[in-house]
Amino acid sequence: DSNVTVADGGAGSVSVNVDGALRAQFVAGALSTTVPIQASAGSAAAPSHSFSGDPNTGMYGPGSDVLKLVTGGSDRVIIDASGHVGINATPTASSTAKLSVTGDVVLPGSNRMITGNLEYNADGWEYMANGYGWGLRENGTGLLQVYAANNNSSGAGAAASPGASTTWDLSSGNVGIGTASPGSYKLKVSGNVGVSSGVYTRGVDPLASTEF
Image (cartoon, rainbow, N blue to C red; front, side):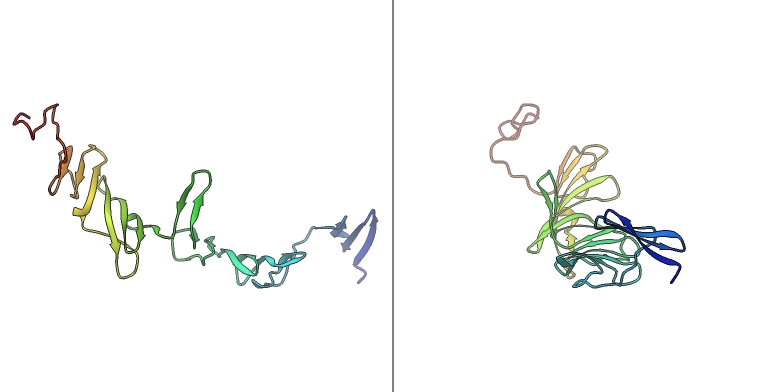
């Protein structure tokens, strides 16, 4: 093809010209190009873009508008057509979550970890282990609740009855224990209160005196 020429540029460089325009150039073992580079789709075992001496690590495109990053011949990161990302997981396209992770997540520098037992759902944050756990939610009326949780049939966290919760009214600062709402009381307790030593109100122990 007379429209394609390969020229020795000297100093270890080779140039490829098409219709008189430079399209690719090898310089000191590196390739630069003015046109897109297209490769086969590839697979996890043989990604289309890999590295010398490590052919099963790289990236490939298994289907339309999907990109996968691979190490050791296994998918590690998946990006779908909607921009959802999965790390050791297939992203859920129907979900509003942009990131899906299988395994624990460590927050660097804080020594904090988010494990597979912790989830955020319609109730709020819930931690489940061995069928039991706790939850933290804002119930939509300005009340912050910490409550006991248990497993439902689907295995996800489910809130126990509101009576099992501790409630904090975010506007007034009132606190309720064992109740869904503290009402107008600074402290409202639903149930018995056990005292091992003394209870003091304005400096007076009501268990030792009738003065309040």
